[in-house]
Length: 321
Image 1 (tube, rainbow, N blue to C red):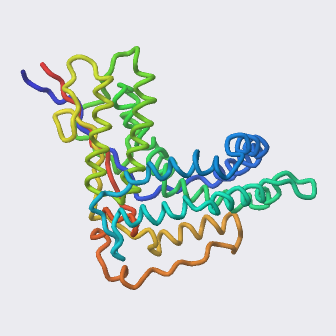
Image 2 (image 1 turned 90 degrees about the vertical axis):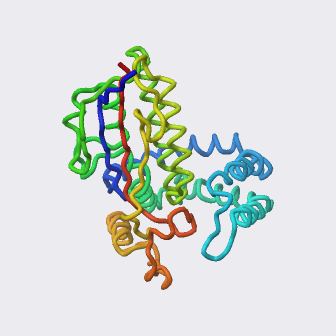
Image 3 (image 1 turned 45 degrees about the vertical axis):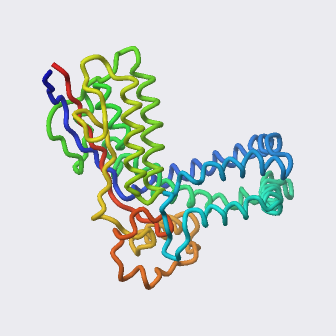
């Protein structure tokens, strides 16, 4: 049985992608508009510190180990087990849950006739925080670069759904080696395929980034993504597997690694905060001396020294014939 390559494409993922500031302000206003609903839902779901412990903190403790490789060791010498134990001690302290409830009520209570007064007063700060989170988070994977074309994940969905217009949405960093968009599933399943693949790609992208691009995390997430694609693959398409004849893989670029506290990224954050809050901005962070003289790529896989680096989604689709 021979294999014919239908498409080879590399879709670029930047280190960061500046989120539209007007959209961040809309988000903050919408968040404030929902404060009454948020307060009611929280009080209903987490009425006591015991509920906070069982429904919020315990699931976090259960999920946390997957974020660190068992052989991980921080620069200060802490192992993954030591880090988990420190977090466990903090979250299992009843005072932590009580402080959570107290701070929540303080932030959302009505004062001088103003609902959730503290939240309303901090709209600019919340908008700035959201813009920063998106710029260095989800917008890297979902948003158009310089407000042009399509975001990386939407572009991948279009190419694997056979959307011919996707040819026009490629951005300068993307690299089309051969082929054109191809529908890899059956027409009746396209909608569900796109939805599930988008969720899986975003989840994997975030997990890889939060692991500081640990090779094991990258490999495991690529396995998950390719397995999901196979659940929807149509007859004739070579089954997907990492680096296989058909594959959909995240590929980090270690040579582009840059400290999250680098001057460039701090200036971006400062610009965002200045836009919303004037001259008020977070307290400047001084880059530790030991990080100034060290190759950032040496810290890949060490979540205690977070990096930003470029990636690409490597696509290859082959047909059995």
